[in-house]
Image (cartoon, rainbow, N blue to C red; front, side, top):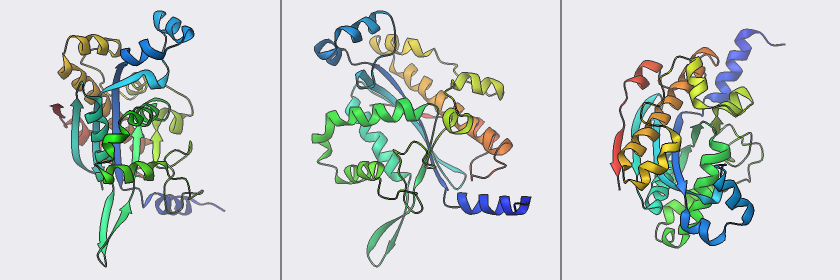
Length: 266
């Protein structure tokens, strides 16, 4: 038997450990060197026809993110660089600090794991980040902290995710890919934001990222990427307020609307 009070109580019990959030987005260009070396005939034809390339051919040129803990926005930054290695290290660093830690008896423990918030991030952003990180594993040997948290991201031992996340699980509650997990279908950020009257994409269009990169107009890429992150956070806030009845401790729309990113060119 389920009355409204029981439903709310169960919902609060379920979401009480979800206090940390990492909202993020990436921008990519074609890895021309890799493509010229190993692309097969079918992949080359796709490229000529303007079709979407396979995940490994996407080189990361910008990463934007917002770190939120207990409804407080701690960081909102957008990194852009021609050095992909720097950007990927930044992502794993930010994933790491999105956790909460506590020290007990001289040992450091993870207290809270972050929930990732994306739009189509399960099918694109995270597969790209993980695949492209493979290229730089030798340099990661000098950063044991990052390697630890990459391994945590890939852990699968807690089948039901009672106490520990499985970020690679399609149905994990620790990664909310808004179109898939809320609406059950891939949809564009632009279309969903329009339905919620949320402004999005003032700086260029996605297909212009290649041109911006070629012309060294990196600041525009970073700005474009940061707008996606802000719109994603606002979209989730709207859904959290109106559909989920504030089940998650997340900033309200007005707070998010007033945020401006720090743009960093590495």
